[in-house]
Structure formats: structure tokens, C-alpha cells
Length: 190
Length: 190
DNA sequence: GGGAGATGATTAACATGTTAAATGAAATGG
DNA sequence: CCATTTCATTTAACATGTTAATCATCTCCC
Image (spheres, rainbow over the protein chains, first blue to last red):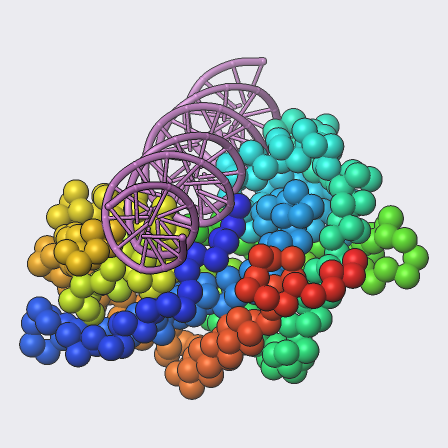
């Protein structure tokens, strides 16, 4: 399952209170490092959790986890898709996908076939039962999405999406230092 | 551990290609539902993954997972903090935190004490060894963050942060339908 | 053809996410 | 005071995330 609402408010601001105690042992010239709660990964994670918090009750009421929903959702708009491609679309790793597909197949929400021309590959498609489940959940989801849009502002939401995609593209174009990247392992002058 | 780079590019656009096949069994008036890959949760997840991808190699090289880093990072700027508060700050659930603290304590990166006035509560603080580890990792992280800022644009990044926080606040103020929320369980007219 | 290496999918093993339940200690109310 | 309830933390149990290894198939090249 995905996040469920790890934690929130509370004494989360204790940090700033005792921020004066920061860097107590940091040697002289060290910048005290970015305020933790304002780091980009944390902001993105909290934002996503704030969003998902509203969708999970409906999903759960229909016996679906976040990941299962992503899979069915991706399958709902196509006829069939190969496992690897599904992993990309639903943003899941192979092993997780493998396990979840096994479960969804057991529940007759999806079907699998092996590609005749290449027996290593398998394709996945949603069943009528799976589509029915989607049709049952979708209206709730769309209503929630609509309410979110109303509260945050449609234009601001679109702008946020654009900025997120631009960020994603900027960072995908940035070489990963220390990672077994495709290239650019240049000077690790640290 | 956190995400590790579940999947990316590839045939991720197969969706839009065969989008014509969408809603094949959707009964008449049904809107075909939001394009999956453009959903806000997916955008946020992909953006976060694009960010974390750059930080993980450095963390891993120092023997730290994303969650362990969040904990040490949160502890580094305060003298001590109670377990529950740490869960809020590091955005972890109690059980996960419990396990991770056990491990970090075993590695002498943190220390724990029980509060004398309330034996149920425990406080956590970072050790000298833990601080040393942070000092070793921090320069790498800051350098990566700086490069990200340079590529995406400092102003745009600040604006994105603001928009994320506004989104978070908007959605925290929005009642959760079907969740065992504090109130507003009004009409579930579905 | 046939073997070496590449590829797609699954399995294995362990860390974390997630919910429920258990444990131990403190507050509360008779 | 003591029983009940509440609270902080941990444990239990299972799903998922993550990396490495396995297995079967396929490709390429000799």
C-alpha cells in the first residue's frame, strides 16, 4: 500500500523553535544546511500525502490499494500492455508489479497472455469485472478531484502541474553523480 | 527504503497513443476520466523521484537509506525530541520509526532516553558519531541541491515550494469524505 | 546450428509502509 | 484508592519498495 498519513502538524515546528541549537558541533565555516522541513523532497512528499489522503478512503472501500488502483487505472484506457511498459506507466518496480498482478489476476480483475512472438514477454489487460470496478470508483475520484481544483484554483493547479513537469525534465537531464549513470561520471572532485 | 527509480520513459506514452480505445465499456455519458499520467499524485510522485534519484547514491555510499537520513537530518538541528514528534517531523509512521530507531541506536548514531516525568515517552538525540556522518554527507547534498536550483531556476523553485505548501494547506483544510475525520461526515449521498 | 551474452519476468531476501493489536504507564472518575 | 480510560510506544502481520539473483527465452556472431 502507499502512504497512509504518516504524520502531520503536532510539534512539527519544534525544529524552528530550537533551531538556535542547530549546528552545535558543526565546525566553524559550515553552513547549517537547509531547513529540513523546507527541503524539496519533503515538500513534494507532504503535498502528495495531502492529496492521497482524500482518495484512499474511497479506494479502500472498494478493496483497492493505491498501487492496485494505479494499475487498473492505467489498463482502463488501453487494450493491452506489456508488463515492462505497465511498470513504467504505473510507476512501479518489476517485483512489486509481479506480486500485484498475481493478486489482481486471482481476483479476475485483469488477464494475462504471453506474446507468441517472444515467450519472455507477457501482456496484461483489464477484464470486464475490472472495468466495472473502475466505473464504480471513478465518479468518487473525479468528484474529489473537482473539489480540490475548486479549493486550490484551476489555473494554479494547471500551473503547478506544469512546474512539476518542468522540474522533472530539468532533473532527468541532470547527470546523476555517483550513480551508475549512462555517462558523465566525470570528475568526482569531492 | 524510499523509492529507487521505479520506472520511467520507455513506452509510457502508449497510453496516449491508444487513448482512442479509452472508455470502451464506459456507459454512454461517462467522461473518460482524467488522463492517468497527468494526475496530480503521479506528477508529484514522479517529481519527487526525479529529485531523490540524485541524492540516493550519496546516501547509499554512506550506508544510509532515505528514511534514516530524514531522521538524522531532523535530529541534527535540535538537542532532543520525543519519538512522536520525530515521527511528525520526519514524516514516518510509528512502527517504521520504531524499527529504524532500533537500528540507528545499534549503530550508535542516535541515543535514547526515557522521560523521567512520564515513563511512556522517550526522547531521541543524535550522537557525535551521527553528527560526523551528517557532516560527511551534507556537502554532497548541498552541492546537488545547488545544481538543481541552478538548472531549474532559484525563483521558480521558490515559487514551486510556495505552491506546494499552499496546495498542502488547501487540502488539509478540505474534509476527508468517508475517512473517520474529525467532523464533516455529512451527506454521503452516493 | 550453437554457445555467449542480452533481455523480460519472476523469485528471494530484507527494509519500509500500513493497520491492528498489545504493552506499559499516566490521567480520570467514581 | 482502584477501575476504567487514555496515551506513547512497540510488536505483529501482511503489502509494498528495493536490490540481487534466478530462469527462460531470445539475439548475435562464429
